[in-house]
Image (cartoon, rainbow over all chains, first blue to last red; front, side, top):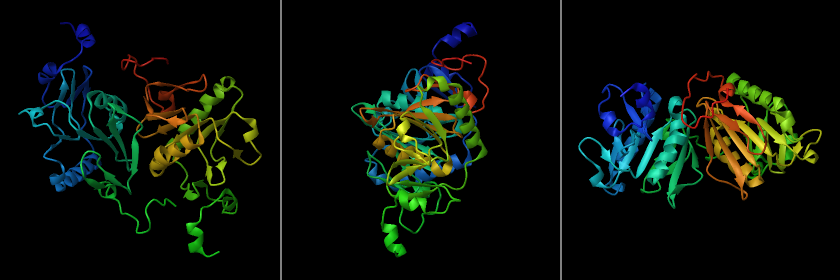
Length: 194
Length: 198
């Protein structure tokens, strides 16, 4: 098959499995997205910070499983993603090599090169596939955005500042965002930005 | 008046007028927000580019006027803001010292210290006061977010990437975002859905 023909074609998970192993890819709607370069240290620190909170609250996760990137999530043949952090409740979705199906909760940590993908392309994707709770962390803005599925749709996102507590919607877990962003909470009353 | 008592009280535009002139302030719901330090050069370049766009499109602004910060916008007694860029259509709102009333369109350019204020506090404020179109520019992420008032509410925001054209909702104006972010548009078509107007 010629290259031109190839490019007009949608890629599938089967194609993906034959690509170079030393690069990470995502496929959304049959379009490949290269995931290099590796995330920044700040990105990874935030990722670890959130994972720690979730692990500490393991008993609140209702027996669901916690994963972090790089783990392939095969939503369908044309949509394969590697979310930074996600939770899967249905054990049948967990196979030896990947997740076959839709996670219940996904957390993406934004970097400059993924901002549009995380806030628009993946937001639409996760909404379409029915991810119940989608959390987007903005490391450089010290802020978090959250979408919750209602009647199969995400409406306007909630926003949380670094000095707030993020209470997960579908699990009884509280995350102190100032700890995730490694910031000191002022001793005076929160919410004053004077 | 003792300070403790003062702090529990809501501040008004009247208080504001008596404060130090060498700092910029905003008041939202009677709470005071200091606007220093001044924005970064990148922030100001983006303001400049957007202003240029509006200037070039001035014939399509339906006689409305655009302004840039620092200009006081007095939404009401307890809410006074200085949006980065805004457009006012009703001439009666324009007074000698400030704007008395609600702009039709507001653009804020996010900096780290204002991200939550711009995307949450001001978003709620502008929705409450009925700003028809609210655009938020993220300089470092090279994306734009837009809220449009429908039935007095903002729904989910639209998102635009740096390689897209932002078409204003309430004016017939197109803004090439790659110019705003000072980026080169790749030669070939980048993505499906890209409208490709250079």
